[in-house]
Amino acid sequence: MADERILPAWMLSVSPPLFLTGMAHDDYLGLARAFGRQFGNIDAGFIVFPVWTLEREGIPAIIRTQYLEHAAEYPRHCVRFICNSPKESQLLQAQGLPATLVNHNVTISETTFHPSPDVPVEFDAVYNTRFIPEKRLHLCALVPSVAYLTYVQKLAGRQAQFEEVYRRVVDGKPNHVLLNSLENGVPVSLGYDQINLQLARASVGLALSAVEGANYASMEYLLAGLPVVSTPSLGGRDVYFDPDYCIICDPTPAAVRDAVAALKARNIPREEVRARTIAKVAGDRSRFLALADEVLSELGAPSQFGGKDWPFRHWSSVRWHPYSYYMEQYEAAGGLGEDEMSE
Image 1 (cartoon, rainbow, N blue to C red):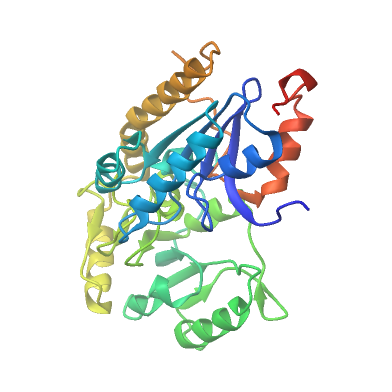
Image 2: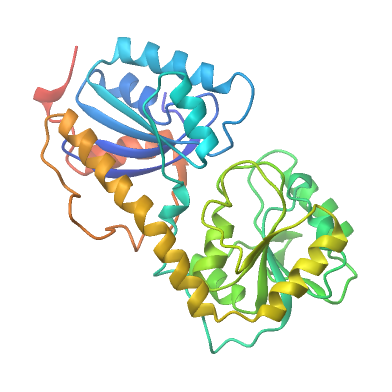
């Protein structure tokens, strides 16, 4: 039976197979274990990133156990880890794991997210986030005007959670506005191009959770030219922040209000925020491409990425699909001839 759980991945190469893949569920090697179960011990590479902070007790040791077990069963697989923060890299390296600092927000596309100068600014801030308690939307309460962008996961209880947070945070507040339309009480998800245009309607982007992963929205704000107000957090979203246009404030409504006002007053041009962010990302992108070529070399394949500019500008973020989707994608792309099947 096909595995219909979902996880994020990109297929970077077909021959040999090479995937950028996120940790999901209890699969701390991302797609590697499922790929091995389906295709056996063939030459294959997996560059694995955390979707949630690794700064949790016991998690690095679990990753080490899975890595060693996988290496014993599939010795022709090459697994490498990229981490969203220096601390995460240190934690995995302390376990003897091959880990390097490359925040996976490098995958956000500056082609998709960019300033939209013809869009009038209407709101003090925008918060692109799920309506769940962990995102701490209540910290927006004192910001004079806030636009919200969201989506609801197809998981049990998520719609009820959205409705509760929406009633508490947005409903009845004329200057706090959900930009998604509602159908049967559920927000209609927006495409990336639509999100980019909606971001342009605000002066500042908000990221207010205490713990998560790298936080795609924070990078989308920066590439769209918005300064960012954040609270202290684990997960690595601050790696590309700059104090000139990013403020990490106390997790209180008053502090968030004051930080938004301060960034608005600085009035830093959006093209400057964007250009400086792209410059910060460039080094990590080069390291990622070099790592991809190192994995290919270990698999006995020639380099595919060396000396190239970032080849993934038209892909934005690493999207989630069922495990089976990636197996079918690999086969449809011409992977796994009969002579490659292992016993």
